View 1 (cartoon, rainbow over the protein chains, first blue to last red):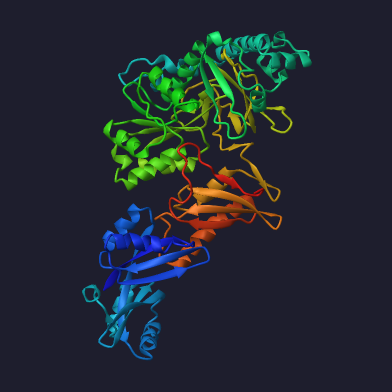
View 2: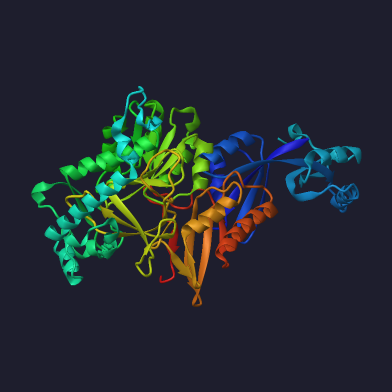
Length: 141
Length: 444
């Protein structure tokens, strides 16, 4: 199933990463996963968290530009070749990945990865068809 | 001839706009009579003006037709500075009832004076400005122009009262209170600088107040250039009809010209202000329809007549009759000043060109700043643009595309390379008054 992911526009300057995170900390909001994309000029902070709506409100009230997009959590065997085997399957099915990052979670010898697909719904259907496990939100939060 | 703008809300005749509809021959006759009188008044009472006429072997009798105004010398802003504070007054202080001054960003401010009659004229032209924008008795007008030495606040204030509408003299700043008053008083019209109104609209949205749900229907904006694209955005975001007004302290303050419901240029209140367009380089008069610098002569000012004042504003006189029926001529909206222009790598650039480029890229808010710098002796221009929720994406590639489209749009219009930086929301300083669009660090 799809998970909401928050993205936050960051300027490329000292302290810009800590500011939104401190806001969430002060609001007692816990993060499940975090990733940062950066360019020479700016960065995009991506967050997966249970209270995403509350987090969005907190950030926007403080003037941050926040975007919500759908990502998909998939678990793969936590062993050499586990991820490659999955990527091969996706490539063979023609599923386009915009970007991905790892979840800070391991369970039962498996690692959870976060994927931003070009088309999340089509990707979920494909994952089901090739029998790759999509992780539900109640298993993550 | 009957016009809807002559009628107030109760259906009664509102004579305030009557001079806007004078038959042309009668208007020119009034202008010539007043021009002769004001030239004589300046000649008799302002030593600088008298000596300049004498240098040219001119006297007030040299004015026989309206076209003879071109014989007269220009008045420059530097003349006001050089004679600071009261050197161009034509009335003794005994007759002066009001003084205003410009903010004076460079050096000394300029000081302007009004007699009782001058204030009456000012109130009248501002009332005509508001009537042209569709205001009438019963309207509640929130006046967010700054009150004080700046002419905007008090000029608009007395204009609203002269029209018979209700003015809320809130002045500029304290945006939270502005939004509270806007909502609680059932305000129907607001006067502000366009950049301050956009700041207020943004703040209202943050506070959960949707301006479209309020009775607010008209915005009267002046004191800085703004674009038709911003007008469309104001309508879409806040539901208001936005009207451009024009004026300058040296001439009277706001009230020199204003838009009617056609939004096709600003009607100059020609019975009080004589407009000319000149070539800003040679000073030669240009015919109606050609673009150049606006020169204004006050036809009825007593305390401080201005003869052929060079405004530095670039516009065109539109001689065609307006669809609203007014006979007073229009000037095209002023989007640039010969002063605002900066030169970068030999190219003349107006901030309005950058604004037009930013607007041409879908969904971009007008919060931007142009930074000029010098790197190894070479001038660099970069534009900082605030990211908005409309264009923000979680994908780096999509953001790079936005950045590139903005940069290309500007480069396409200016024909020079510019740097473009996306910056966080609310990071470009907001002015409660005028927007600072250009930061020149080339000589830092």
